[in-house]
Length: 168
Image (cartoon, rainbow, N blue to C red):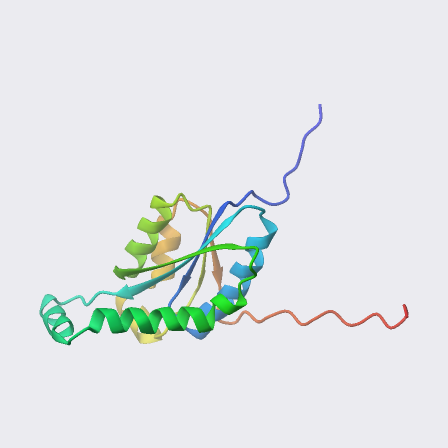
């Protein structure tokens, strides 16, 4: 009887979540590195705009003329400059922006798109905000129906291997 051991799962839908923090940028390196290893995979980039908790703040936010259009333009530009230029043309990339509670929106997106792997940084923009509201990453990890790769804020890019000088 022969057994085939699969060394790496077949990931067809990979979700990278960003809040544009430094650690999200480090997590992106892992995400964009994983996508080409899975031929035909779709790579999703998701940014969730946190929705204000208090209803009365929403009134003030939406009174500013064209705030939604301007915010969308700014986020699109940030995605373009921070990420899109670093994605090889061979990767099927799709971006989406949502408004709401971060963890809930990430989990909803993952469910809707039958995501195979979620990649995100452990710490976002604000340690205080994470402490007060609970970690988005922890919430996603506990409730996700697929594996979640968490890139810690201490992760660093591997140095290039030393050049072999014995072979001319």
